[in-house]
Length: 232
Image (cartoon, rainbow, N blue to C red; front, top):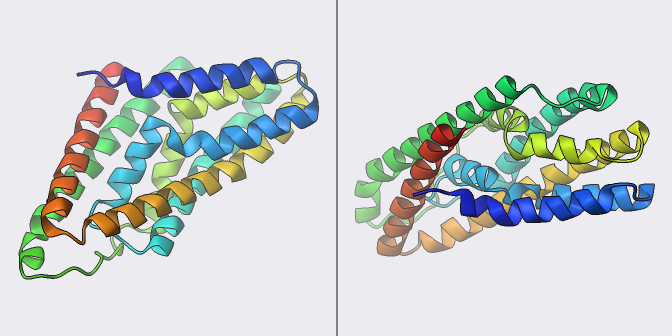
């Protein structure tokens, strides 16, 4: 089973944004950069990062948002560090670097999906005893989220964003658009992580539904990660 269909809507949206951004006035380019940043967390590889990083046991919404924000900061930091010289040189990320980054992202998704499954399995006795409190995020540290975000910044749709920005009419406009996109992507990731934390918390209130949800989410993320590694 392939997962290319998950990327089709994203590619369609990015394609239209690139068309509208080409030769557009600076205010239009900056608006499109903001919209692209706010949509960025919905990319399939980023959604899988949210699922595997946050887990499926449920967590406080504020804690989930904070973890997602750190993921976004790492992602934005990489885009800024890599994007500035690429825009200046009017170049793209070398193919081998992007390919290996995407493979590492796939491996990381597999590892985090397996960890989520193990956490769920180990938590069965507590759930059977009637424990319903949200699982702590102690082992999902801001540093870990930041590192995962850094890696994602080099892979997949992060590289596509840099290509879109490179089509803007001037280098200065591309820099401004990147400066707008980066913080908006942090907001996007924090919001999507908070939404996932809220959803997982509500679903996990029912032991049966929560268990089915955890198994389905972890399995889907695991299959996606394996496919992502093989598809590069």
